[in-house]
Image (cartoon, rainbow over all chains, first blue to last red; front, top):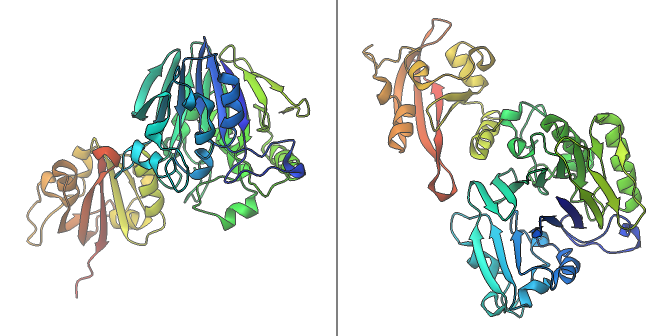
Length: 298
Length: 131
């Protein structure tokens, strides 16, 4: 399984010199295995990804964790949607009142976007994410609701050789007097348990989290604690706050790692980084496309 | 290891902030949590009792009505919410682990998630102080 980060920013795309190293695009992750591809979320990072998929795949499965704007804003600029030779399957969580099509159309229709969903030339298939396990090509996928405002799911994606857990927007500490508590009572625990790679929300500093309780995100320290609780092998702090510069993130991740003293590998979520997950139980290798990010390891 | 349904997790977190007793059962009827005010009502901490199957929690506190007649387990508000998946309320006299007889009133409701998933039930209860 090869995992590539195309957008690691949370909330709002934030391009600029001060965010150039970690990247300014919002959530988008590519997962490839055995000639199949999954795309996790359609943040602004999906535009560049789409350009690389052209003519390589006749089917693309896009798994949305939820429909907040930073996770769908790139959707209208995803090249496979405009290719009549490609089947694009979009999976997203159900809501209590509207189906996935109706909810996506709120964005993919005028006045917010000039192209209607129904006018996209690809073979578009929409799926409400089933609870429990389902399969797409070589991927066994488990989805389940997690603690974040509105219908939101996390994904556990398994192949024969590796387990990826993707929880980009997640506040497992919400309301907990002591965090982390028992895994049994922790949102997202089952999805993350013993994963080879965990990509997890780490938006805030501890002080910022105190001012944003209930907004659906985690502090960097909480994310480390969650990763430790779940027993993951490799942790990627993700969904960086748009106000955090590269230097801020360097300090934030380093100080959280110093406190947590993790026994697992930590690679900061950086746009362009790829992970090759080859064997369960073996630390994954990370390659920084920009050649500027190393990795932390206790 | 699976974890509890997110709706139950959020219900427990809310219960942790309330001054009224809250009892939460899962879809199988197992009492999976009660909060600190409920601990006072039952005379024992949740950490001591742990989870309890329906057959245990519905009888162990010897529920009775105002005349002292036993209330059938299936007639308790929480049982009604669980088995009939509807709101239920009522007055119940219970004898806790501390052997104190308490008059309580409870409102119970089924917990139904998106897609109509039945996840369990919860009861909010308080002790009625006799005048």
